Image 1 (tube, helix red, strand yellow):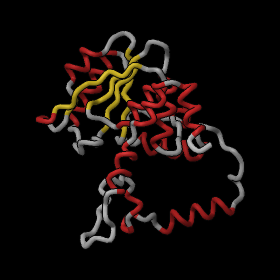
Image 2 (cartoon, helix red, strand yellow):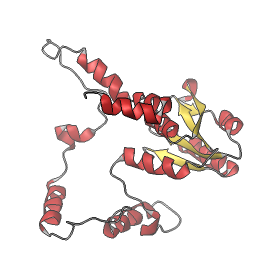
Image 3 (cartoon, helix red, strand yellow):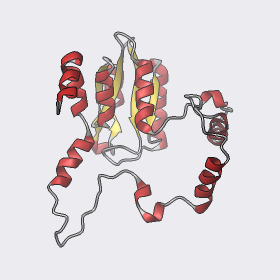
Image 4 (spheres, helix red, strand yellow):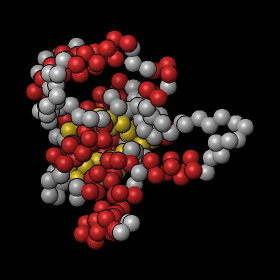
Length: 221
């Protein structure tokens, strides 16, 4: 029976699901690391690891660890919480984000997820209306492409301009958008390009989105 569940999945879901599942940066990294001789004389630097907590200098402070232990021992959080996140956490996030805004966010404006991947799943699922399309940066983070394909959304790609620090080509954004465009994705700092947009460029992106009447999915920001 080895491998059969995936065969059944492909049989019922068809080629799009198989194609979406193959679009993973992890698969590329696994192939790279499988070819590395760990016993060699030179150290191996895992530059494909985006999790800073794997380094000792980024370990959480003792106060944070004690707070987690205290929450566990309090037995106040042993059951299922609301899918949007517990109220005290959403309230804390709303208060923190409101510091840099001209208006006050409420806890109802906050949806907490278990990491970026779940956030992408939730957003794309909500936007996946029949006939809709979403604007994705090229090059961009592969998960958006695969999740869009999985949800039967049309992906339209706008270019990032290398000579301008990988800024978004806003003319192509306007040319690609139509009445069925629901959102555009901005990854800043850029993954995989590593660039950081200026405040001026971000303001132009916001103005374009406002003009087109679409939302911005702001990844990394």
